[in-house]
Amino acid sequence: MSTHTSPATHLITGAGSGIGAAVARRLLDRGDVLWLLARDAGRAKELAAAFPGAHTVVGDLAEPERLSWALSHQTLPDRLDSLQHIAGVVELGSVGDLTPKVWNATLAANLVAPAELTRLLLPQLRLAQGHVLFVNSGAGLRTNGEWGAYAASKHGLKALADALRWEESGNGLRVTSVYPGRTATPMQEKVHRQEGRDYDPERWITPDAVATTLLTALDLPRGSEVTDLSVRPTA
Image 1: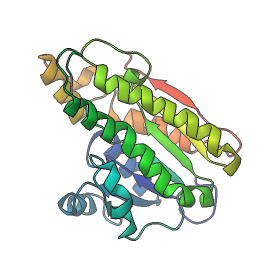
Image 2 (image 1 turned 120 degrees about the horizontal axis):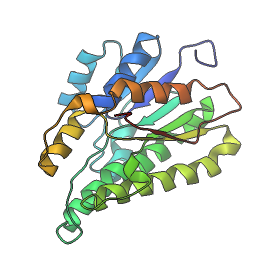
Image 3 (image 1 turned 135 degrees about the vertical axis):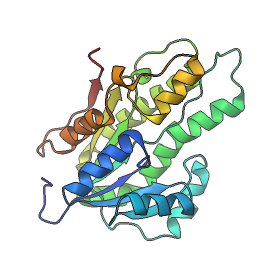
Image 4 (image 1 turned 180 degrees about the horizontal axis):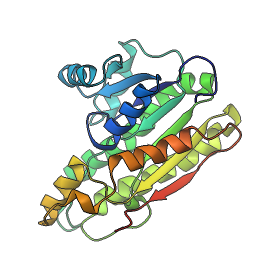
């Protein structure tokens, strides 16, 4: 289903669980070439075992300023049909309680790291006239109490995607933001713990449904792009 004869090549963050794992599995099953970002060598081994045939790249999204050095010492794909930003962190808390440490950690992983990773991989994306996909969140469009730091990082991620779309359209790049509502992932389980609520995965979107959304945007014929897409649980 790729637009050229050789298999499409994708680099994915957050492939260890949830939405990222669902997307990686689907792309691998259809014969595409995967490069999976891992925070450290141990995680890279786990990902390589979970997705046989996939390549791994080590780089810690918690430290965006070190990504350039890390990637420069590793083999990278020559061209990239897609870069998929799926990893993210969340820490709930009121503005009155959240410390700079939490703000900085949230913005580093959810906003600065995707910006830096995109910057570093733009040559490969331009070569393939590739696609940058951001898994944002409903919190990237609206904000509730206790969600300030996370929502700020996701509002910023929307701005990053919108700016990138303007800047790179002349190079043939497509840019998509997907805004899932609550999705049945390990992160959602953590959020429920922080909220002091019981977690029932049946109530929320499946990771596979979000993966389908991403693949729909990815597989759209050339000359068209999905810019923003919200996915919500029907319950």
